[in-house]
Amino acid sequence: MSISVSIVEDNDKLRGTLAKVIGRTEGFRFISDYGSAEAAIAGLPAVKPDVVLMDINLPGINGVECVRRLKTILPQTQVMMLTVYEDTENIFNALAAGASGYMLKRTPTKELIEAIKEVKRGGSPMTTHIARLVVQSFQKAAPVAPQSGGELSELSEREQQVLDLLAQGLIYKEIAEKLGISYETVHTYIRRIYEKLQVRTRTEAVAKFLQR
Image (cartoon, rainbow, N blue to C red; front, side, top):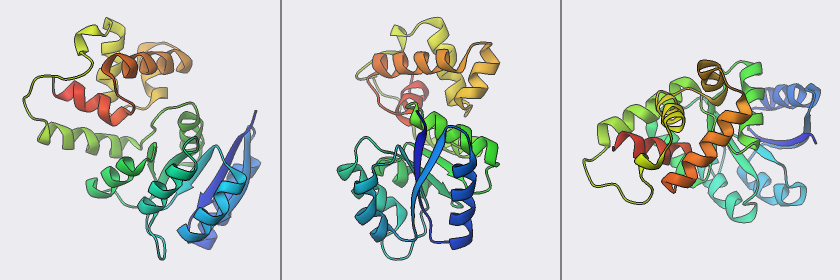
C-alpha cells in the first residue's frame, strides 16, 4: 500500500517541488498541500494522510502549534518537521508537541524519502546533525538520578548496541549497515527497546541511555 503524504509549507515553490517529488516516487501518494496551519487544520481531517511534512515558520499559527492541534484530531497521522531551524528549542518544542521526526530542508531528496518511510514504520528520523544536537543537549542536562520505569539492564547485548548507535545520532538505515542486519530487524529491536524502557520515542530512549 502506498504512503499518503500531505505538505504544510508557505513557500509556494518549495511546496510545489515537494509535491512533484512525492507524487512521482513509487510507493507514495501525494494527497494535499496547505500554505498555512489554519488551512491544514481545516483540511487534513478530511483526507487523513499517513504522514504530514510540516514547516515551522508559517504565517499565523506556527508549525509547532499546528502539530499540537493536529495530533489531537489525527492521532494516527505521523508528522515530520521539515524546516531550516536547527536550534534545540525548536527541535524539542516540535517533538514535545507530537512530531515524530525532524529533518532539515536541505536534506537530499533520497534521504527525505527514506525518512518518510521510516516515520511511517513508526521510527523517529532526524537529520544526523539534529540527532547529535539532541544527544548533546541530553548529555549537558542529564541529572545523576536513580532510574525509573524500564531498566537498561533488561536489554539484550544487541539491543544495547542498537541503543548506543541511536544515541550517537545514527538513523535506522545507518544502524542496519553498521551492524550488518536488515532495516526491519533494526525496527524490531527499537520496538523492543521502547517496550523494555517504557518509552515511546527515540528522544526518551536516548535520555534514559545517557542517564545510566
